[in-house]
Every structure is written in structure tokens, then in C-alpha cells.
Length: 293
Image (cartoon, rainbow, N blue to C red; front, side):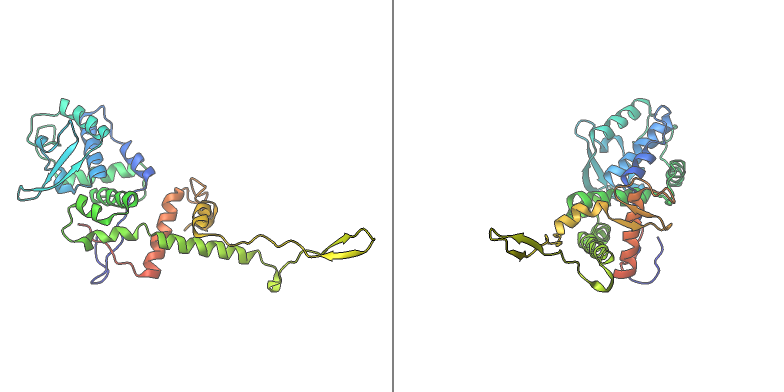
């Protein structure tokens, strides 16, 4: 990614869970190249490997019994150790059963190393075929892995170790994608704004009429109305009710987390809300731009 100005970086673009499923459904596992490409995409999505790392993997780098994956540095030294899931390993076992003899785990049908240009074009082509409007690169899959890992663990040092970053400041960019303080502040703003819209003209408060009660001697007295329940909502309650609040999509339609797709532009609600949050960060908090490693 290009830098807009010195010292600023763009937020990395990531795939939603639904977009990941759509992308993984595109390769045809019944075809040799389709099965290989499916395995390759799964490894990048679920282990966060760089393109240069995934095409240089050897069969000895992966333990098919434990799922342990050793990622080596450019000089051949062990860089970091990761683990693949059971389903990832099962797909790779199938690929190993039909792949040609090769020193590379993911190779061409002639046993040669895959060209990085081929992988970039393949990922982009399958993304378009899946109907994903984002401009997808192999590094987008690495960004997606990092963002998902941070979202689940909230531990940026775990993400740093998984990605193999030497400097933690490089990894910190993912903390801006999921900011609980921002979500809480936006949630509070939405609640308070809705209350103001329902207030009467001139900020006049409604008061309940005083009720009359008759005593045994026939005398009527006025009784104070019962106090109204407080409208104060705690932060945790606001978070629980966030899903029912509405905001405007970029196309102008009103959307909320309880919806699946925007009725105006048909984009997934999750994608639209994440984009609004990222745009809000860029404008209001001066978030730096991310470089594509």
C-alpha cells in the first residue's frame, strides 16, 4: 500500500467472516489445481503466512499428525512455529495424495515452485468470482488472520509472535480495527441522540396527573404520582442493545446489526458497519495508514 504522507499508514483491509467463507467456496477441490489453491488459501487465512513464505513451504515443514507448521526465515533458520486446524490438515493430506514429486508443499503440476504472480492473480480472480467488492491480495488474507486473532485474544503480543514481526509497533495497527472504547462512545452517542429526538417541544417534561384518593370520612386528598423509572442505561446495557440501534449506510439507507444486508446497496451489514467505523477513525482520530508488508 502507498503512503499518503510520511509517518502515516492506511488501516489494513480485511475480510469479514462471510467473505472468507465465500472465497473458500470458489476453488474446485475435485480438480488438482483447485484442491491445491484451496489448501494454499486456507493456510494463508488460518496461519497468516506471507506469500513468499507459503510458496516456499516444504513437506517437512508441516507435521500432519499434530498440525505443527514451521515457518523458516529467508536464510533458512526457523522463524516461528504455528499450528493448522484439523480441517486444514485434512485438505493438505488429500493434496499430498495427488501432488507430483516436489521439494515444495504447494507446487505446480510439474513439481516446480509456484510463481508469486500466479498466486496474486488467483486470489484476485477468486475474490471477484465470489462477488467480493474489495480489492483482494494475498496479503489481505494475512491481515484478516491478524485482525481475527486480535479480536479473539485481545493480546497484541500474541499477534506479533504469530505474524513474526520484530517490532511491536508494526503489529499495533490491528488494534485500531477493534476499539472497544470507540464502540462504547459511539453507542452512548446513539442512545442519547435517540432520547433527545423523543423529547417534547421546548424541552418540556411530561408530568403524570395527580391522583385523587377518598378517605373514610369522604374527604378527597391529592396523592403524588409514583416516580418514573430511571432512563439511565449502563455501559454494558448499551452494548447489549447496540444490535438494535440504527445508523446510515454509505448509500443512505438506514441499517442495523439485526439486519443481514443493506436494502439499498445489498452489502452485508457487518461489512458496512466495519467500513463506517474505519472511516470514523480516519477522520476523527487521525489513524495512520498501513503498509503492505
